[in-house]
Image 1 (cartoon, rainbow over the protein chains, first blue to last red):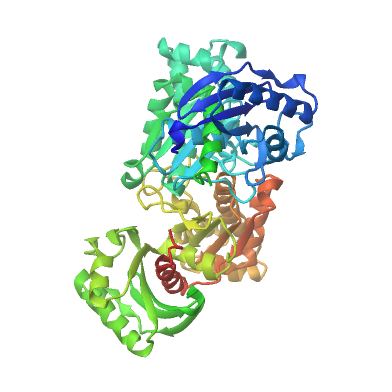
Image 2 (cartoon, helix red, strand yellow; image 1 turned 135 degrees about the horizontal axis):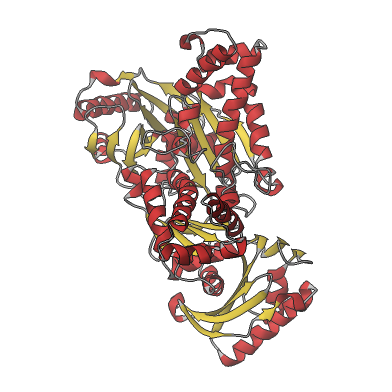
Length: 317
Length: 317
């Protein structure tokens, strides 16, 4: 049976909430109440709660074939083993797939959240029908996921896609790992805010950092503020440099961009396309699209639900 | 029959010479006299000569199953169609695979030379047994090839692997396409030479550029010259920055480095390993090897011969 007519459950496990939904293709048939992650101190208690929710949804939807869980951290997909989660205390060395599968009696996949995001866009979103897709999520940090030749590229230790750690300046700002020029030290939400406060200061216009969030800057630029517009050009220069390097290396069909900064729409997409084009050959540029993500808060649910079904069918490698 | 016991012909088509050899596995059973490329003005005349050489070798080796040709430029692997060759006049829109196959009656593959090089190292060389491999060739320019999850990654327009065009400085030196910070504007042979002449000048030691080739610098550094050693550290900083970015993005098992600069051995490999390690997380670094290429001048012959056989068996995607 083609996956478009089958149903599965997607679980998007975040540091604040665990979100759960039933999906069929790109459609979310039902969304359960989110689980507040910090209410469950032990992995086993949280897994119990996930299993309880899954069984509740199965009593309403009889034809669910698989469950996919996305987690914010390092996971071995083939084993469904969680090595460590960045912002969730206690989650270290947890064989999540095995435990959850035993509890619910359905096939389970466990994937990194950025990989689930690119899979959602590749299977059902902005990059549907393309073979080589690079997804970026812009937020506090910058995450990424790669679909290459129609398959998720996970890398030697399931750690691929760390676009925020790539360097745009060999002598630049030091990243979390001492990596000079780390992109997210330029285009992370906090760094954009600090840079904007500085630019306003330099222009003799004092603004608190709390008035310089990417959202504030998008509104100001839309209203014609030249300093805000200049800041978006600078963000495009930084982000576009990393994207051009990725394009030279991978020659992808598309970049799909999600997350807070992407909400600035044309304010960021127009200068970004200009910058990337200015750095590429015609051969690489003419096959490349730079697209806003279709899914935002739902990417985890849709992507993990799709991965779980595709794994059943041997299509998600 | 496993490919290790079968024979094939590899053709390495360069701007100066066309080199031809018979291979079985990692072994070159025979090397033919090179053909001087500029002696053949028309593609058809050069293809005739290739076909003649192939038939000559087949009269000596009866068990040849396939022929692989590597070309210096843009090629569509699935069609074996040469779009354009960088340094060979007249080679534009040539259906090389179709013509050569008709002439010799054997299956033919046509691949880009950097892809053939990474395939040689992946199948029979330094990266044998690894799944995710990035190869770099350091010369006038910097070429690259990618094997990801055991398959050649060619990209949307068969143009992937252009590592020399990746940026190491968003405000840096302008590359061939106007791409700021292009790696090969720092670590190409000519750029290393010019940089070295400048460093000697700054130290009050006048040297002609002709005394500052990478080979000269390797000899000087080996003899203890502190300026030459500093130059290799700088080359490692530039090259290592790009390699660290690739490692964050792809999380590969290995980099394999070939070409002239790589001949400097530990002088370049030691500072390079230090720089790359200093820019990575433990998770990414501990699975990563930085290896000298096994094949140098023979990479094209071995890689194309292997690709041709693997394609017969459906293993070279």
